[in-house]
Image (cartoon, rainbow, N blue to C red):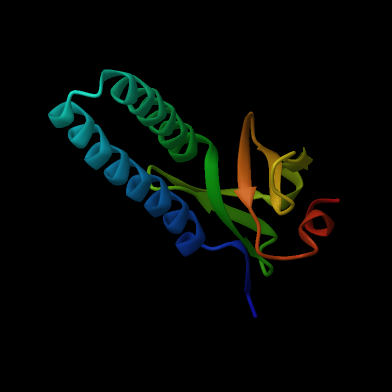
Length: 127
């Protein structure tokens, strides 16, 4: 087995799909609030929609999928915008997220990224 998936692409894509589905639902509710003339509800829904749009931008820029090439000792990581390969010794585990148990903060090169891991022993790869 040459590759070990730490966070597959489908998990990354599923996270984006959930956010987009929430945006579609909030857009539908915004439309209903505009038609019915409920201005207080519209303000609340627009606030929620803008927060979700901010989270979508943050998710696309800071969350990555990752897999380890065990033969070459490299980490292949990326998102919908890029894909890069880096030496496994250049990856530093910074810590865990406070919200989720399997979300880790790692530094790859000079940037910090979040990884939604599917493996239990994620920190052992970067010690």
